[in-house]
Image (cartoon, rainbow, N blue to C red; front, side):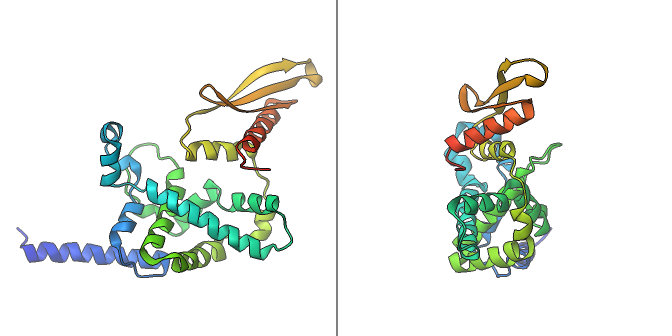
Length: 249
């Protein structure tokens, strides 16, 4: 049986190893270890029954959703300032679109893995893992850096570890935005429910056929679009929804 001193040393050793990993990722030695542990704790690790019956207690026990909310806002702010300075002659629409491309869920998922944050996430082991968990953890990590070390170092972390190595503006400029993917990402992130595309009308025959499709969450219609095929109509319905939600102009 281990003595109290041995148990303490083992605990201290684990804490030191964790702090070292955080320093390798962020470039800074952390002060408040618990913030990073919270940032790396996915909601799936919290008992679902407890989340359902006592949301306050579940939040108190800890998962990264609140830190994700904070980190998302900070990342958007830093990216917005960066683009504002890089493109002094571009309008708001261009800057908004560029930011959307940079912080899209797939990009953040990939960056999380490249920073080796993914292997540190505490989550419920199951057959299927929602890929958005990785981007969410990256945003929560940013939130933890901010609360631990302040805005200046958080900004340095975002520039040195995210923008400089992984954001290639020439490539980003030429990326084509899928309005459907953007809408799906928004609905998932906002936890609005299941997004569905429903054909509400078909006009004409053969080559002249036009599909009218609505994008819905539950009974709420988010947008409507038309096209000569379902794919085009879904994209236009998604674009219409994003415009109504003031996510694009």
